[in-house]
Image 1 (cartoon, one colour):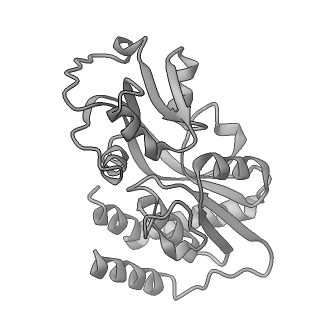
Image 2 (cartoon, rainbow, N blue to C red):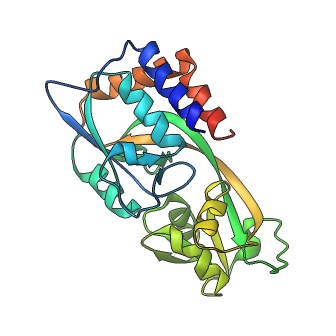
Length: 250
């Protein structure tokens, strides 16, 4: 992992001539959350103030895109509700990775897709649930978290969701029987469970393979959005995009 990480950094420098992330005009503010392996603190902390302390598939994609531009920026790790609200309400602020939906589409300007995820329902070890369709779980209490697209999806369709501020406590809530099932990403779920020393959670149903984006406040200038999307195309052309996916086993 260390050698490949150094190789990715060298590829960025060679591909884009060592362009520094500076701009004479506006600074951009990007927020993400602990949602491994997509975004995560490099040291396991709840919050990070510097981009170099944040890892993950989407984080590395966003960093590579930015290094292919002349934009000035900071990246911070906070809880999802905080970062999402900042991106909704402040120009030049963005949040990643964000699921693109028709309902969310007019609220942001979009850069991506960066990668994909697969929504998955997890049950506690030994639950023996036999789920053939989502409707089989009507009446159950789902573990979720506020402003998350999966939580919103279930609530809009009349499912009962116990939503908390951050997803990282949901594996323990499931193990303790505080919720019946937990909705999470197929890759992220096991990461969160391992961080909480929860073993044996069972993926009982998966659906809705979705695309993840960088979502920018709609008052952000079109010139900035253009530069970001051009940066994405550059890292795809250079092989950087594929190298990051390979690093994380995608």
